[in-house]
Each structure stands twice: as structure tokens, then as C-alpha cells.
Image (cartoon, rainbow, N blue to C red; front, side, top):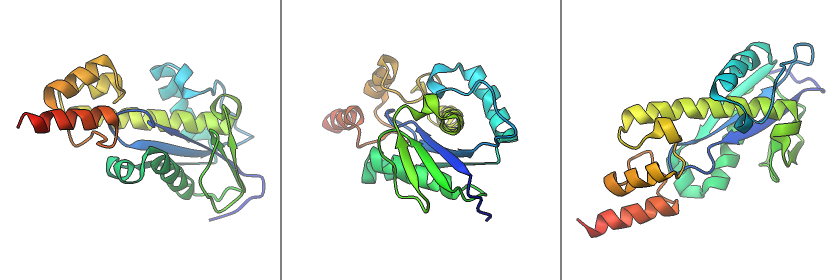
Length: 197
């Protein structure tokens, strides 16, 4: 693994708030000589624009890494700690060692190099924007896979967020293996189903 003093890795996660599925994280080291135009916080981009940018980021970046923390890890250590774990794994997955890391948000986990948390970084630091896009696209793909594995919950549509449709499916079917049992609506659904057995 080579180290270059100017390499900055942007890091972000996707999927902290949903009731189901893993939390994904990405780390990206952009190439200053091959800029990617149109980078922005993934939440303000359409799905088709994110998909197009994902391809461009992967083709032009000096390095990128993707990682996740599982539903079991989220339930065991809480969503914040699981998000930190996924971000550490994403940086560890980079084929180049960054000189420093910038993480979206107000805190960051320990890394083997200097790191800084940047509030709103996914909108103002290009490498974090790129990481935001990779993490979001990867998580959406995983939710499509979970939709096929657990039909009836609508994961392909709401991506695990606590929409009315998702809550209705939880009330009707009860939680599946993809649900985060430490999250209150899922816990409440489990309790209701236990009472009626």
C-alpha cells in the first residue's frame, strides 16, 4: 500500500435512519487531475444521476472503498457505533493509504491517520460528496436484494425507511430478518406479534 502526503479520503455513510438493512459507508480519494463534475450530497440527486455519477467516480477516482455494518452489528452496538465501524472498514478497504480523512458529520471514528469531521461535508467537500453517492447507490442496491429476499415489505420502494407503507407491512407481517430489532417501531411490532401467539 503506497502513501502519498497529499491524499485526502472523503468518507460518508448511508442508511443510518431506516428500520431495516445494513448501514453502508464509502471512502473516496479523488484524482485532482480527473475531476468529476456534478458532485453533490447524494440526497439532492435523482437515482439516475447518482447511478451515472457512481460510474464516473469509480472510473476517475484514485481509489474508493465500500463497506457495511450488518443489522446484527447495529442491534448489538447501536446505529452510531455501527456507522463508525462501517466508515473505518471503508477506509481500510482503500487500495491507497490516505494522508488524512474527512468525514461527513460532527464526529468521526479513529483512523490510522489524521481525521476531521465536517458538518455538511457531503455538500461542500467533493470527496465526501463522492463517498455519499457511492454509499447511497450501494445501499439502495442492497435494499433491492432484500426486497427480493423478503417480499411484502416494499424495501425496493422505501429502502427501509419508516414510511406509512413500511409501518403497515410491519403491522401485517411482523419483522423479518432484515429488520433492526433495536429500533423502536420494530421492537413494538415484535411485542405485538408475541402477544398474539
